[in-house]
Image 1 (cartoon, rainbow, N blue to C red):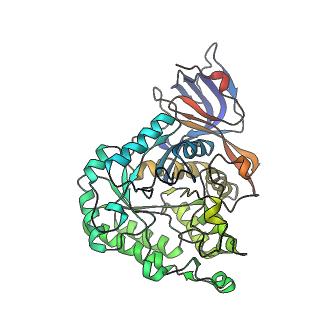
Image 2: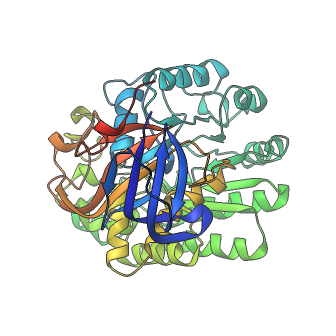
Length: 436
């Protein structure tokens, strides 16, 4: 277990509304002191973290680990390694594995694998419907009692409104959240890119904003009707942000997330038929990108999720229409978020809140941040650390990201999960840990 005195660091703790220079004393994996006036203990390893941030471990409410079924893309082992390298100590894998996580046996399998690795907290999200076919809802109670924390058919929408309504009504028995993949399939059709100038230029079928907006509105109305808790995944359009904002003002129990690529990139990234920038929902326009940032600023968007979606070279180096949707994101999410801080669009406290307190509230997690007596769960961030994204620098098994070759600024340099160091870029904590 870790014993160390972290001093002269910027403590950013949204759970306790703290943004201050101070120290954190960790003894045998537990927090013994935190704040500006913590006395330095005798005979304890000391790290001067001037210029560094220390925050509670980040939470990714939406990722894909591919296990079971597609381990050649990612495994729970490689996925959790990628997570802690990005500063995430808690990740929530979506259910669209092969087979999908639609029963207790799959949920237990995922948790057993995660416990065996013991590198990060894995909280599985189970399917809304059996086989993710949109016909019959799964056994919510059984899945929750075996470790599922929410329900989604992510990857496909729940096409039938009456099934989605039933899921929202049934969820009231368990006070759990239903996560919507908002896509009107008939409008999306065979589209592979945002409908607009780039789809015309490249001669590719486009997906209009309305394909997302219509389903966002439909599911919000169903949540309003049932009083169920709804969460909208990967928001990408300005209209969706507006619809969610207005619903919140009416008191609807709706939350939402976006992903870093939607506030960092536009449809221009697919120029030259760049399959590394192909995703669903697709990258949108500059107007949409700015609306996403405004939604982050004003609280309409509750959290930033990576939508980490690993694919092998087989699924990406092919014709654009045939290429798989999705990019990896666990290791680039934090630096892309820090770019918003550097641009003056978010404060450090707001950014870290979107990565911690926001997702925690969506999932009703009992996380307390930095409290004396709590097991240490934190990330040390160097906001000035520059690095170039290369296949060799990534811990994920897959390398499908449009940020390959790009120099980013700001990254996690050490991650502590459950009182133990699970990632240490510079080896700063290695001498401070005692194995129990």
